[in-house]
Length: 548
Image (cartoon, rainbow, N blue to C red; front, side):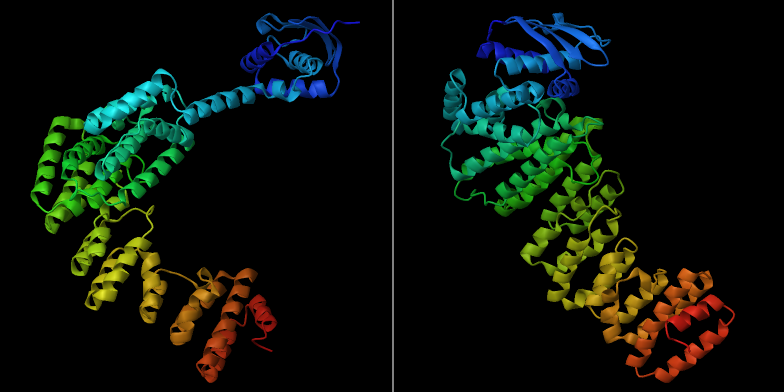
């Protein structure tokens, strides 16, 4: 009888690790199938570290497994290296040792899970040993540190995560690691520290290699992976939530230097950021706008602050030379002129920026929300009139833009002609909202004229879409239906004839609703006579019970 030789826990863990490294996952799955099909024969454990067996394949293959060194194992099959026959024998080893066969078959997943669990446990337990002491020491330094020193401390705290895959879990662990150095900060300083922590992690997600070098975001051709993009999106949402909290600078004026240092860092990244992501606003451009709108402008009583920023932007741009993104510079200057109430200068820079590629539409409309919140309706109307025609991207949903017009017109009715002229000038891009507003404002004839001029046919609409016009101005639908029916007849095929008859039946209902049945009868007689030679059409007219 074969002696019972057992593998201890350490040897078992090493075997799983070696199998995960040595075998392809597909090979393990095929080996598991062979094991389940009882293809492993003459299984013998020569020792706790050596196994021999015969495995049935296209023919019988002799397998010798060296558990201490899988690379020294051998199989007689044509495959050079790890094969499904070897994997099947390893499954039998697990069975003989009363170990989990499934763990061996899924060795790669098991190892990945153990790594993740180890990292999770490390994050949950906090930094241990010297790192716990380091976090404690840094917590004492943070209250008196500058923003640049904060970032140095964050780099130390997140260093153990440097090789971690950049995904939402990484962002959570990095924030948790920074939180280990919990410092006693006043409210404004606490908000600024949290913002800088989120910005620091944002940079580590979107910068190749996770390098936190100033201006390092301009690397061309760098695309975020799927899970990294999710993490970035979640961080941006967290930054928005953070900045929606009021920054109490009035009661904590000593926080101004840190706010300005934060602004200077964001400014640099914004001016050098790549602008090839057409479907979303560049990350630091977004942060720059939010920083001014949420925290700086509400606390700024002196226009000198905006003049200082204009000077700082130009000085920084001059130092960066060719590395500066001109669109970002123009947009930032436009925002400063907006705060200085110099709208003409602001519009000039917006227009210049709109001519450049890589501009997200939200960046052209960033000043609308502050005007609406402040109730400056005349000025908002002027901004809507100026910025609307600059929107030339079909990637943008204009509903928010249209919503601002509704707010203006409701409070400033005399601005309505201004709205119509602007929206019509934006056609065809504004087509969807232009049509909707015409219906909302009961401009039935203008709506119908637009449909006829753009070549629309009734089949382009659901019945419910046309119901408001049918209810309030049914006579406007008559030429719409007449023209479409004639077009269908000209196509001269059975399908088109059926569509024409369907429209004619809707016409009959309209004439009846308008109490003009006699006019309908005259038209139908003329129509039938004119197309009397189209036998298929006549058949469809009879099927539709329009003629006897």
